[in-house]
Length: 171
Image (cartoon, rainbow, N blue to C red):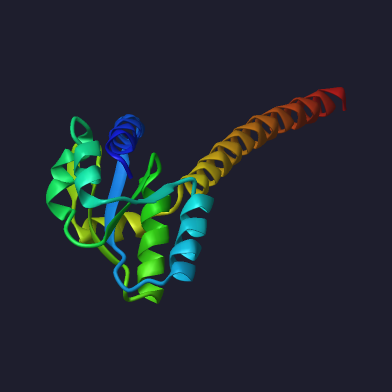
C-alpha cells in the first residue's frame, strides 16, 4: 500500500468504527486461508464484519473512537471483528475458537467499556437478538390471549347467571 492509500484506509476505517458499538480483537496466527475464509463467512452471516489490517493502521483507525482503549492489543498478527450486535459476533468467534485452537480472542470493547475474554464468553452465551425478540413477541401474544379469554369467560359466566335467574323467575 502506498502512503495515500494507507491514509484513505485509515480515514474510511475510522469513520466505520465511529458508528459501531462493538469490536473484538483476535489473534489469527496459524489459521490457513480456508479457515479465515470460513470465519469471514460465519461472521458475515451474523451481520458482522471481519478485517485483517496492519497493526499500525488499525491503531491509527481506532483513534477518536470508543475502541482506542484496545490499542495495547494490536501486537502480532491481529484482526478485528466489529458490529452493532455484540452477542452474535461474540458467539461466532467463541464457537470458532473452540474448533480452531489457533484463533485466540485477545479482548474487545462495547461502547466505551473494555471487555475481558471471560466477559466476551459470557456475551456469547446469551441468546441472540432474534431469540429475545421471538420470546418477547410470544410473551406479548400469550398475555393478550389470556386477557381475551378472561374477558370472554367473565361475559359467558355473566350471561349464564342472567339466563339462570331469568329461568328461575319464569317458572
